[in-house]
Structure formats: C-alpha cells, structure tokens
Length: 354
Image (cartoon, rainbow, N blue to C red; front, side, top):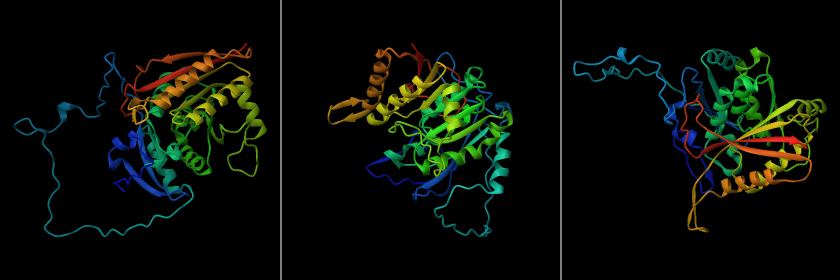
C-alpha cells in the first residue's frame, strides 16, 4: 500500500505525504472498507523548537564525532552482505478484512513499551474524500499540540472540550496535562477510531489520573446526543460537568467547509453562553492556497470565511456575551517533527458573559 490511488475528490494530508513510507503500517480495513494505517510520532522533549530566526533546529540523537568515517572523511556505511544462495524466510501474504477496533494483549504490551519512549501511536486513514478528512492527521493538530506542551502549566488540572477531534491526537496530548478532556466529533466509524487511539496511548495520561471521554457532538444539532442506546452518547452528569467546569475549548484545523465553519461558531456561542466560567478557545488553522477558475487567481476561500466568522463573533452585540480575539504567535518551541509552514495560524477566542 505504498502507492496511493487518487480520485478527483481525494484529499491527502501533507503529514502523511511527507512521512516516509516505512513509518506507515497498514493494519486493517475500517467498517466502511477504508485502509487503516498506524503511524508513530515521537515527542521531542529535548528539542528547543524554533529559534528566534524562525528556523527549526534538528534534534540529533547521535554524537557527530562518533560517526564512523573512512580515510577520506566520508561516512563509512556498513553494507548488507551478499548471499550466493537464497536464504530468505518464507513469507505468507495476509488478507486484510473489515474488522472492529479491538486491542490484543500483544498490542497493549507493545504500547506500554512505546510509552516509555515518548511515542504517540495513532491509527488513521490516508487519501480520503473531503467528508472523511477527520480520519487523517493534519499539521494544525501538531501546531496545537506544540502549544499545549509549551503552556502545560496553564492547562494543568483543567476540564477541556475538543471540537472536531478527528483521530484524537490533540486530545491525547491535552490529557497529559489536563484533568478531563471531552474528545468530540461525529460518525461512529471516526469515533471508534478515536476511542481506539485513546486506548493505544492511555499510558501517557492514566498515571496522573487524567481521563479522555470520547463523545458525539454534532455541530448541526441544537443539543447533545443523550440516547443511551448509542455508544458515544452523553450522560446528564457529563453535560452538567461540561458546563460547570470547562474553561478551555480547542479545535485543530476544522474549517474547510463554509457550512461546517458556520456551524462551528454557532456551537461555540451556544456552549460558551451556557458555561459557568469564562472560557478560552484555541483554534488552529492552515491557510490553504488554491487557484480557482471563478476568480482566475489564487485564493483561500475557506480561510477567508473563517476570518469573516471570527470578525462577526467579535462584533456581536447581543447584550449577553462578549468575545475577544487575539492571534497567537507561532514562534513557540516545536515538539513534533512536521513542517511548520507560515500558513499555519493559531487564534485565541475569549468568551465572557456580560
């Protein structure tokens, strides 16, 4: 599965496109027949991130003075020996089938070993239709995750709501410092994948008694899903806890469709107006440039609509809520290996009752 077959409506995240093929491992097919891959991301705790010049330093784990070199000073590469006869082990092909996301004992043991090395393991799909982009990992999630780790003291012990959590990467990082994280999205298949990723990485947050609750939250609906027959429904106690204790809301790269963006801001207003405490929302977004025939020029329509919604929120004068906006400089240290392009932005939205 090294080669991706594209259709006209296929979208592929740069995170997966730039990651070497060896870093992806295809595991299974999800309930809708899409290939599910597993990728590992290391938290670079010894890396200082970007310096004042904006350049990303390279985190080296090997001392350059100890690298073997030949007499001319070139790298001395140890080459694989050639065998005159074929002595390869017999390999039997494995036929992947659609399966439910359940962890085996072997996988759970493997996760405990990975946890000691600051590895976050995420299951995801690649090259999906636009409506399934939440099943991929995007640079905006890494930018927000970097910010969380830099501002760990600010989020420590907090109750946090993530909107449009997708694979759950940002919620997992948040749970390393926060007390309770409500990780929300829509779609049983996506939520099941998110729940599996939470389980895969529980060693990162369970020792400090933090928890992640994966729940359904449809921005197009006016209320929470409380149908007890559904796996990811809300309990009355959770809704009360959300409104009484949430102080932070996060959303990573969720504005790519104008209707969804409108629904996001309606949801933000509804939630903020019912919360007991003032809340702060952090939204990461990547400004994606596209050439459109309609404009015959390069434009960023999804980003422009996002900025329009931000301005409308700040200018709202309903006598009930006051929203203030503030861009966050992305010069903070980088803890994950990804390309922090200049089109990545982070916005802070503060909500207070009048």
